[in-house]
Image (tube, one colour):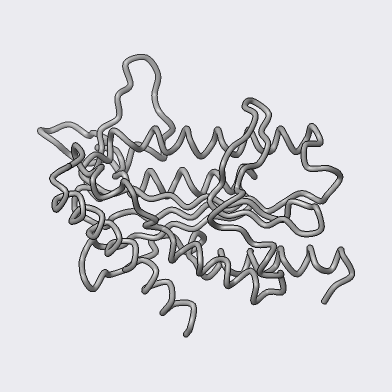
Length: 253
């Protein structure tokens, strides 16, 4: 099956897993607050993890070196350890660590800053631990970030910035519009904020590569990739390139 078809199937699996978790909660009579019932007890991103693991193995890594379920802890600098979603350890070297994250409505505003801080903090902790020699003398690992965002009207609505003292970065202001005879900046949507966040995570070398995928909560789901530089095809190419480089440095082909 082609990668694009597998990507679609993996994203559909995400929505199906959320629905199944919620149904189980309803049947048991224990419903979590908000949308938490759809999240708890599931491995919603599991099919996406398997897809990435298969890409890594197809590029030349040994299956036994790619971990997605257990023994995922890596040492940090500001904390003793962190559990990643997928890691690759080959011949005692950290080859890759990756996060799979998602965001669905309706609480986009409540969760955007949490997701941002989490992504920046986790990467900063790992890179500082790498600098301090926690991973031996191995080459710099690949740090990946895949984000799945629900495609719905709420995530595409402009969000007004709060600027009581200083102006925000102009990229967050959006294009000027006329309202009641005044020119105002309405702000950009949460989908655009996520795009800016993830692009800057890569530009600042906080993550080696990243992908932003949007998908409708439907059956069948409809997938879109709003940013060419963050599409899954480029992300896959970066993964494969890193594996080839790593294996080459070990004298393997």
